[in-house]
Image (cartoon, rainbow, N blue to C red; front, top):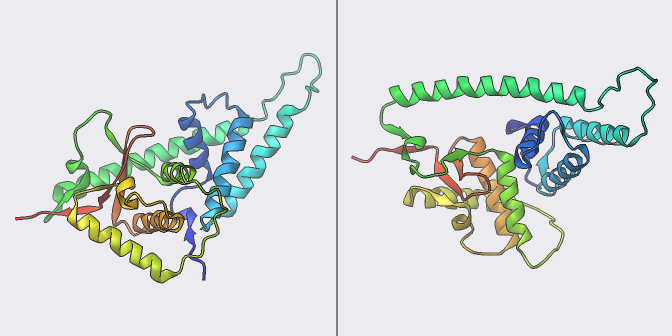
Length: 241
């Protein structure tokens, strides 16, 4: 049986679009639709290859991007004096509205975490243990992790097609190994988790195991600035007397 991770518990298609806009340092009001469509479809293929269960909204948005791209390639047909409607306008409005709600949600979540960290007994917040360096450590999501995963696979010499058959036993073993190593170390980098091995199946197992541990809220993943080192922390560090 193939092992599937439900993608919709992490982030949605608009999150992927916002990630691509931020990653490419684009103006959200003037999105180069051809570039974004190509990169969006590349991510969809990568997520499918990983056996991640794509919600239907991802495919709907993919079709929307292709449709907008095709409309922008057509010659102008407006009458003289009429204002041409930008095919991207509705998508931009949707992104801005979503970003507004997302920022409000993150603000409320941060307030809840602060209350937990202040009043909880017997544990310490991971963020307090983060090294005070520049650039600051930032907690990352699914798509930043996918970026790292694709970079690692891109360095492998064999371009063979990824055909993944993850049995639950081997995935459970990988999850246990990661948690055992985190008990011995305060944190581990993504590279350290791979132990300098280039086995494709190990890399895939590690990636899926990290997603499962994030889903269970057993780990938190941070990055030292854009394209920086990715480091994995246990979600809660027990205080040692």
